[in-house]
Length: 188
Image (cartoon, rainbow, N blue to C red; front, side, top):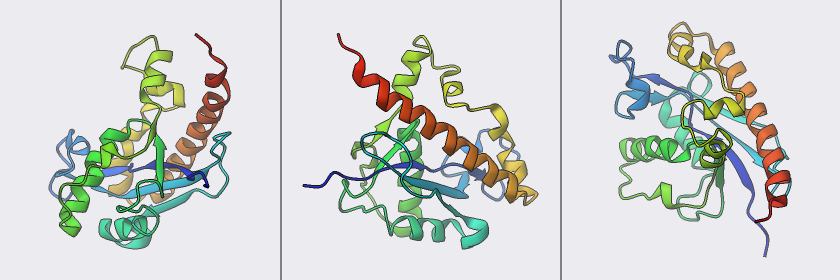
């Protein structure tokens, strides 16, 4: 039996859909925002280090949110949850967006994406942050610059968006590799 490939997966960044640029909370609502990029990268099952290139699916190259989803569905099997195991931070939030967009574009209903195999660092990072929600993502090297995403997208500053994506992926995989190495050493 071969082990499944763990892949870092992110549904971010998002940008408000047309008509919602004035709504500061649009990025939290899948009905008011659109996925402008989805990233994934194969990670080593044991070390957590990248074993392949970061793939960035984005609408400025693919043309639309639906084309991003079409490309994702070539590797993210809805039928076999072990084919692609997302690894990330706050993945249930991301699953909510993906579930809505799969319903919107393909009419797929009843998907239980949040019940699929996944590795979510959110709770480990919260524990490392003294049990606090606020600020836990800073442990991944996240800054508040993601708040600029709608403006970057509106001004077609795709270079800045891609730079942010690559930086976030690099920081995430560094932290993930350290956790994969150090957490197994903890004994109770």
